[in-house]
Image (cartoon, rainbow, N blue to C red):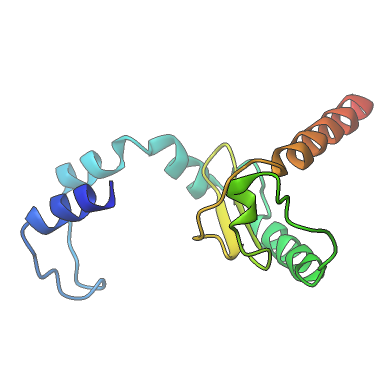
Length: 136
């Protein structure tokens, strides 16, 4: 897939657009560019994302990341070959909300398997559901 993407990318003509400050886009070209993402752009301009204070939220995630990063207890599940081969010191968090807000910190570009972490994810979703139902 990476080779295919690279081949497509290298086949495109290189255009010198200058600096971002001098970049211009004609009205029709601008419309074509934003059409597929108009709902997302509209929410961004009106500050109506699912997490309104996203920077604050990201700061809290970053705090949690650094608190948990130094936890070294436990062992890699050696009975699952895919997990046995992975360095247990990798640690990262990536979040993407339903409306496209994204935040990543740590070793988020390292490929990994979802073998055992799905249980924690499911338990978290269950707790969120319980808390949501209690508020209703």
